[in-house]
Length: 369
Picture (cartoon, rainbow, N blue to C red):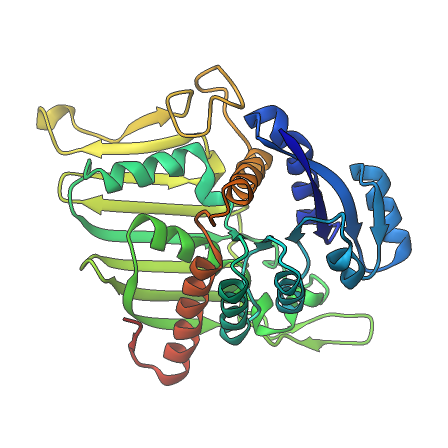
């Protein structure tokens, strides 16, 4: 057992989640590498010091370059806005340091391609943060599909819908600007990643993307919204399955609408992140009069549940997903081999998002294969 110096860029929503995860992961999973919270970076000195004290880091800075270059920072977590990911990752790889990057990998396809190229050239461990697919229920769903428990998959429906922008009178923020911060850039990557993990590569798609509220109020008057509120696409997977994926940040009543349905030739699966400790399974067997979806409550028999709790049905939560990610990142560093999802998997998601925008612009099906 040895310690490893962790540097985290970003102290807000995800910066806090990763800081807590790095503090807890050794106790939860008894990892061979034990994180040492070495340095955290925020946008100014006051914020950096606030996060340092709150999360228990040894040092702080307002310059990510200082964090990346520091010799006591041995591995880096990027939890800052997506338009900063590329420069930070490339600088870290140039110094031979492993990188965990929050989703989406880059702000666009070109960024992600450059990040994957740098990762491959450096040989460094790399990982991208798609945390929702790591719930015990979704890990179990993936295992059920891969084992053939529901037969050959014929249909997939996935959504990531929330309502944080559903009120047209909500003032304009950074979320209203830049393609990378719209529904297709911010929400879609999670469910696209789920579709690729559960079903496999997408061969072609046809997309429609919409901005519902064209302006947002501000202190200086209405501000034009430059990105999308809603996106959706039909698709055909390489294995022949059909699919439909939809995304919205204006879906009133939906708080964490990361949900999917998988239909196979022998059964079906349903999952909703708002009830993340339950998986619904249907099997086409037995007396027709007694068939129906069966609710499976997660417990110690399901992937990555037992380290958190010994009681079936007691459940895991959002922070636990981040701790599972931390475990995998540390294991990847320990073994010197990247663990799914790697930067390449993040690039695969960006390719689908880029294809969706091209399809919407052209009004045509786009081939990805």
